[in-house]
Image (cartoon, rainbow, N blue to C red; front, top):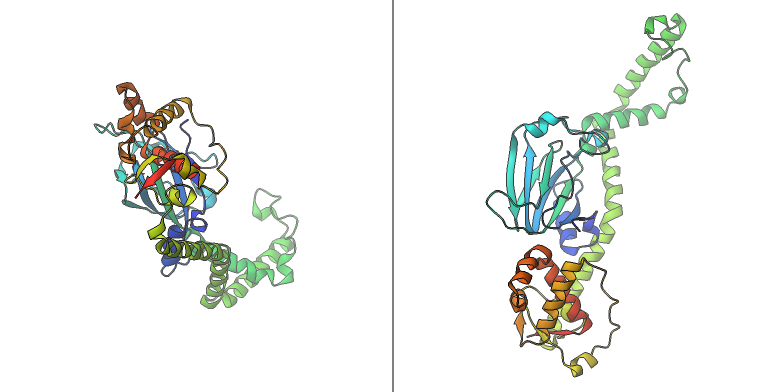
Amino acid sequence: DGCSIIMNHVDRLCPNTASLCEDLQDTFPFAYANAYLTPPASQAVAAHADDRDVFVIQVYGQKAWKVYEDVPIEYPYPHEQVGKNGMAVPPPILEGPCSVDTVLRRGDVLYIPRGHVHEASTYPQGDDETIQPSFHITIALATFDWALSGLVATAAKKTLDEVPEYRMAIPLDVGMHYNAQDIPFEQRLQLENQIDVALEIVRKELTTERINDYLRQKYRWHTSKSRPQRLERIAQSQAISLDQQRSEDNAAILGPEAMKRITMESWVRPSSPDEQSLLDTVRPKQAPAIREETAEILSKILHSAQRAEPVQILQLLSLVNTDDTRKDAGKYVCDLTLLSFIRSRVERGELSVVG
């Protein structure tokens, strides 16, 4: 129905993305990943700027990207991200030139610096009438966390918090007058002396070593939340790969194990009753409800596949007889939808993998 699916911290779920983020952390202090699945002729997120540097990796389909040249706020912090949390993107930004205006296709990578307004969509571009869904992964580097002003401010606060005097409230008259000159002289002098002493303390205690220790603790905290899950996913993937290698000569032709190795180039055929009887696992529950037009086309594809000789998944749409159905298929059934559907039918034992 035109909605996108966004999965945050997918590096804790996907072994390949986990490996990529772990490799990136040999160079960068911390990296994480979010995934975006956008249907055809749609836009997941309106124009906005991020408080971090990102790498966009196009995994499937294609997506049109615009990165605007003018930057509304240089190196924004989380509360300064235009296009988010009710903070509008200034119209002159969107009316101005783009530094990037391109279509990303599978395998392409786009770098977007912190603070640069950008937007992306799966709408047709110009003479290209191709309508495709898009799946991309965004690798995020939380560079706002590494900004010197934030580090100095945090370190200074930690330093002054160690002095009980600076935990106390300031004189009550401060902030109660339009002009600071109206503050009683003794209170103004007291505050000025406190500021002078505070600056001396901070200047003495705020060192490179202290900022390094603070950042190191912060990086460790971030890593402690994600690394165990990443390493677990990587280990599980390696174990599965080993098991698959051992069982190549006796590969399953239907059921969950067969489903895992299906690609668009795979061939399938109807399952026989004897083959279905060998499926000793509990069949998955009915698939979630999908829009009526998509369900109708997929039903026709399954009906045709169950009557045909072995057929490659890439060719399944050609089994649908009417031109109108094939035309609608491009709108309602993309390759990813078709592949997911056939995988579910193999998992349930209705179709078998050939070879």
